[in-house]
Amino acid sequence: MERIPVLRMGPLLLITIQIDMHDKLALQLQDDVTQRISEWGSTGVLIDISSLEIVDSFIGRMLANIAAMSRVLGADTVVVGMQPAVAITLVELGMSLPGVRTALSVEAGMELLYGASSLTQSGIADERSEA
Amino acid sequence: MNELAEIVSQNEKQISTEWLRDMEKSTQRADLIGKTELEEQCRRLLNAVVSGIKTSGSADISLPGWNQARDLLVEISGARARLGFSSSEVATFVLSLKQPLFSAIRRSGKGTQDQLFDMVWMSTELLDRLALLTTDAFIAAREELITRQQQELLELSTPVVKLWDDILALPIIGTLDSARTQVVMESLLQTVVATNSKFAIIDITGVPTVDTLVAQHLLKTITAARLMGAECIISGVRPQIAQTIVHLGINLEDVITKANLADAFSLALHRSGRKIVREASTQVNPISKLFGKRED
Image 1 (cartoon, rainbow over the protein chains, first blue to last red):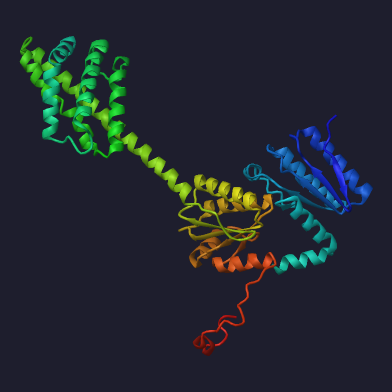
Image 2: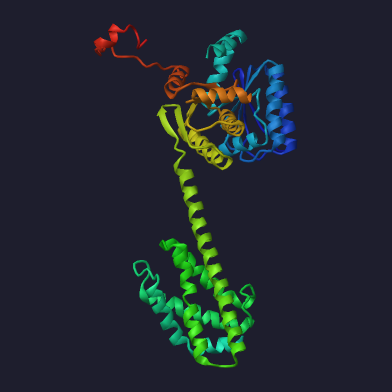
C-alpha cells in the first residue's frame, strides 16, 4: 500500500506530499504523524505541499487537523510551498486554516520552526504582540 | 414575392450602380473603405438578398433561407464597426438600397397598382429589417470591442512591483470587483512564488470606496497569501475609508493596516530585520533643524 513518508530531521518531522492525496492516504498520514511525534518526541512538523496541485475541503481539513493534533502533542506545524491555485481554492472553499503556520519554502519553514523551538511560548506571544 | 426576386436579379447591374451613386451622395466614407471593396460588398449583398427572397419566399429574415444574407450583413457591419464607421453610416448602407430598388420596381411596370404597392411594402419591410439587423450587429461588434478593452485595462491595472528583497507592493487603482479581485489575487500569488517574497503590501490609495464586498475581496486575497506563507499589509487607508470600515463593522483586526505606503514599507523592513539609516555625513537642512527633530 502506498504511504506518505514521514522523515525525522533532529527534533523535526518532514513530510513531503508528492502524490495526489486521497482520503485514505490522508487518514493514514494523520495516524503516522501522531504516532511519530509521540515516539520521537518531535517539536515541529513541516509539511511540504509544493507538488500538491489538487485540494478539496477534506484535504484542507486534514491539514488543519494534523496541525491541531500536533499542537496537542506539543509540536508546531508549518505548511510550506502552497501553490497559488491551491491557496485560491482553499480560500474559495472558506478554509483559511487559522491554526496553521505557513511559509514559502522548506528553508523558510525550517527557520520558523527552529526559531520557535528555541523560544518559550510566552516569547513567541511577546514577539507577535510587539509587531 | 418571387416577382420581387426576379426584378432584383434582372436589374442587378442598374440597382447596384444607383445604389453606389446614392451612397456617394450621402455617406460613403471613401477614407475608410475602398471603392472596389464597397462594390464587392454591394454585389454580394444583392445576391444574398435575391437568394433569400427566392428560397424563403418571404420578407421574414429570421427564416433559414436568409442565413446567407444575415451572416454577410453581420460580417460587413462588424468590419465597419472596427473600421470606425458611425452607426447611422452603417445603417445607411442598407437603407440607401431603398430608392434604387423602388425605381427598379417602378420601371418593371408589372401588375396592377395594388400589386406594385404590395411589392413596395414588402421590399420596404425587408430593407428595414435588414437595417435593424445591421445596427444590432454594429452594436454587438462595438460591445465586443469595449469588453476586450476592459479586459486589457484589467490586466494593465494590476501591476505587482518589487520594493525590496522579500517585499512586494500591489498598488490597486479603481474599484475592486469580483473579476478584478481574481486577477489581482492570481498575479499577486504568482509573483509571491516567483520572487519568494515574505511580505506583500496592498496599497488601496487608489480605491475610491471600500464597502463590505471590497473588504471581503481584500480579506480573501490576504488569506490566500497567508496560506502560501506571505504576510500582507494593507496601506493607503484614507480617513474616510477608515470611518466607513468602522461604520460598516468590517473586521480587519487580523490584518495589519497602515495609513500610507511608507509606514507599511518600514514595517515590512523592520519585520525582515532591516533598517533604513541616514548616512552620518549627510548634511541636514539647517532650516529643518530650527524646527526641531522632525525627521525622528
